[in-house]
Amino acid sequence: MTTSSELIGVIERRSAHNYHPLPVVISEAQGAWVTDVDGRRFLDCLSGYSSLNFGHGNEKIVEAAQRQLARLTLTSRAFYHDQFAEFCAGLGDLTGKDMILPMNTGAEAVETAIKVARKWGYEVKGVEPEQATIIVMEDNFHGRTTTIVSFSTDPDARGGFGPYTPGFKIVKYGSVEAVREAIDANTVAVLVEPIQGEAGVLVPPDGYLTQLRELCTAENILMIADEIQSGLGRTGRTFACEHENVVPDMYVLGKALGGGVVPVSAVAANADVLGVIKPGQHGSTFGGNPLACAVGNAVIEILRTGEFQERAARLGEVLHARLRELIGDGVVTVRGRGLWAGVDIDPSLATGRQVSEALMARGVLAKDTHGSTIRLAPPIVISEEDLLWAVDQLADAIKSFR
Image 1: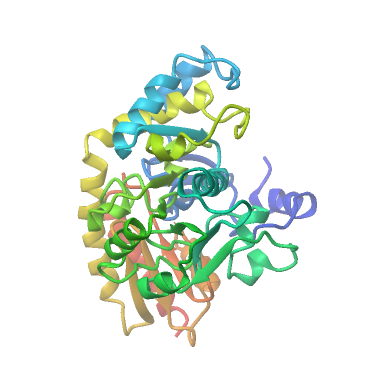
Image 2: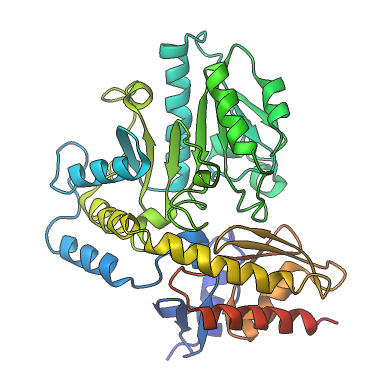
């Protein structure tokens, strides 16, 4: 039998070092728990950065994938297939939008939204050719393609990958006034995460999304909500924008839309926006493939009941209440919404990486971001008992650095 250490040795020699994983090699998973090649069990409190909102091996999603695997997996968009209509109609109903443009990864969906916004700006708003600008936020994370890192403020994501794509204005997250000041005749869209995940689960001030929606409407610019991490039940609502009853012009979706089985992403908007895309102007061989649509249809069906949204809201209250008890005892701040939390560790005690490693030693998998911040985003299927146990392990891990 090959051990974790042996496999990690091969990976470190033969794989590019674009990630810095925790030293665990997972081989099996079910629900909120995973097992490594050495037989050790861990509680997954990262959920593939919200890709596994519905748990590992969700029965409905796996069954849908297995049925489709035996029938048809790929046609390309050169032909229609029998899962496509249900996917577009179902996701359209879930988002309240007329049209869906399916892709694979979240970054592809963001790139799609950027292209659509620019084309809408030229053809509908009347912006001069090649002059369109999109307003984005400091500390954003929308992916790592060349265009997207061009407007990143993270030096690790951006540094060394220039020359960069023009056409973006970066403003302070959470400030509607900063957006207002950045708008000019060439502005076609504002791209925003309703909650910034990679930045440390940053929740904007109350009313921010509402005021942003009002400003975009008044100035005839598109509001694009990147709900790739925050959407599909994670925050206790189907979409995080719903906490302020805001409906953006475009939803950018991914991660949990694939149920933790296959990459599935999409842009959802009304026909007056997505209708600017014509045949041959944008596409993807695998985007909207039969397997992806079958899985996506299962996810949409799960979300229709509201069960997972209600569960995330209820367990989120439990999680945040328990985490707040740690403030002043090794924890500086707790942020988040639903089953999603950013926990700032006292930097004088330990880094986020050190705490993540200490958590792993105690049977909990989580990941750090930006120095001393730990992100917690367990699958929504997690039990309350396991959730509280995870926070107890966090408290014990922090205590070990005193």
